[in-house]
Image (cartoon, rainbow, N blue to C red; front, side, top):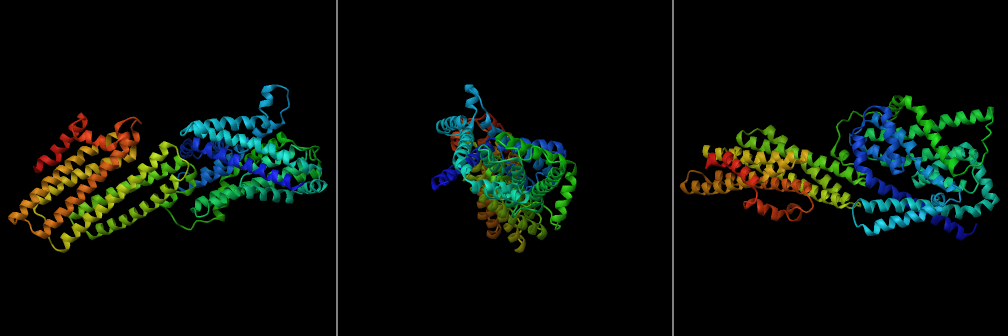
Length: 591
């Protein structure tokens, strides 16, 4: 085998691995949102978990990708460790679908349809179809479908190229002798685990084994330990993925490892023990693509059936291995798990969860600040400042997470969502900042023993109540995707602007008549400014919720500023009605 053959082999392997990666990424983009919803609804029923894991791994053609997704959900607190066990067991079954697809290369027939199903024909056809989709559709799911076709086609092209590249090896006696040694179970398992760990895909390493089998170089006693080792080697992806995750996520990775090690050990002892006593007739039988695929599937199914009744004991084993340190609670960093970045729709849903948490926290701080203006309490001030630090931390973490997410291949909808969430987190963080400003005004009034006049206090009560309703509507709009709550914000914001403009004029008159001191007046104006700005950010948040749910050809999607201009100039009966109601509720009593 010359240098040219080695280079050809490396090129074929590269095509195969690139095809696997391209297909998997495309399938994840198509299915990630649906998979997330399925996983979130998973119950403690272990059988449903196994079925779900098999379906997910079959869809994305990767048990490692499914396990990594599981680790992410456990890390985020969406799944419990017990629920994840079934998914992981099922994933080992689902990942065998690729080997079953690749066995099509063993089909033999003069029928044109059957011939087209063989990898050397099907591969180029699928790549061509995929290129057409990928080139002529600039966005949306059709482009991703093209990516999946390209990946699957390259998978077929790669494995056929590997077969041709490895053909000269069959003529080398040294290679034949070396490969016979793989029938040693310990060496075979080690080789299978090492190769799979290096390329981080048991599906790909089984495909390589199938390519060798196509040249008649693999028998049962050689294939069995290698396939066993491949199941262990694929755990490296999950182990790497669990680095930096919480304790239960690390346990999830350990479940994957222990499951494969225990299954391999049991069947290694059982099969080799029986063969030494009985002597299986098929032990030295030559394997082809189909028999390799069947062996891979049967082994994983039997391992699952063996360990399924002991799923709770498996959980106890990993809990003993990785004991609890007494820590509790899921941090924001767990919710914003980097593992979700490869599945944008899942990552966006987690990011939206944190935005909602920020909105609720900002709302709490606003109410604390208003409470301080009415009745100063140092404990409430301390709580507000602690929550403000958390709000700032969430803003930094989420901003960084969304920036990383924006670098992933996103469709137009997901890209808009990233932009909307970036603006939303900024709005709610700024509301928190303005609440701190309100608390500082309350502290200044308290420390200097200054008191607002009953008239000024009554005015602030009305405007702060209007802002409170606008903020409640903004939070509700994000919690429930409610466009009606979002629409209610703008009439309230208009009333807040009307009240604050009126109160500024009154305040100037009080200063002129001497009924208000400069020190008190300064704080009064500062409070008005912060209330108005909080109202403005509520308006921004509401517009973005309306923008998100509106049709693509609507004015708010095309030009949000023009949409707001129309609202404020009498082009909406609903707006005028709600504005009149808010005006009567908050402005008329102090007018």
